[in-house]
Image 1 (cartoon, helix red, strand yellow):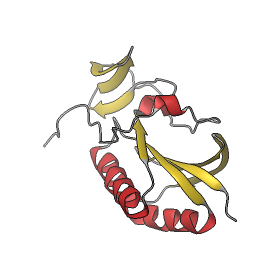
Image 2 (image 1 turned 60 degrees about the vertical axis):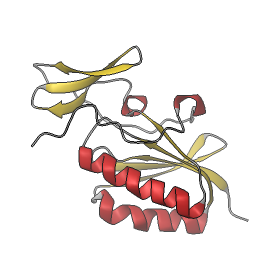
Image 3 (image 1 turned 120 degrees about the horizontal axis):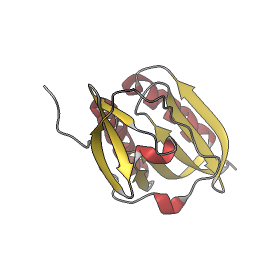
Image 4 (image 1 turned 90 degrees about the horizontal axis):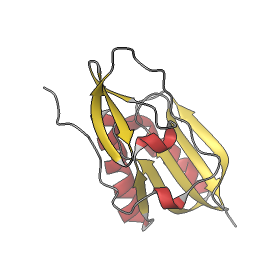
Length: 153
């Protein structure tokens, strides 16, 4: 009988991070430098063959518009087809609340529970990391993407 797990996706920048959680504890990490549109179906196919997936979680932004869109459409489709609940939280949960690049010198920042943009002269170093223990209270069933600012053309 396969392990019952939760799967977390952070696909806002490279590398893509996928965490496999059993009883809220991280038991496996998958990293990929490939394009999410190409690699997510392969990775999740392997996951679904190996585990019984109880819940899907992802970082719904802010970050790359295309990455957020691809992650959401892929996970929402999987959620509907496989009848697996989908949950989301903002990207700050995965980067210790560090500024996230928006465009130019603009960065997304989270102050209290509000996400807004702020001009920063010096680019902060930031990387996304999977949590060792998954905190369900940080996630919402409102899993639609959060873009933060309109598309820039």
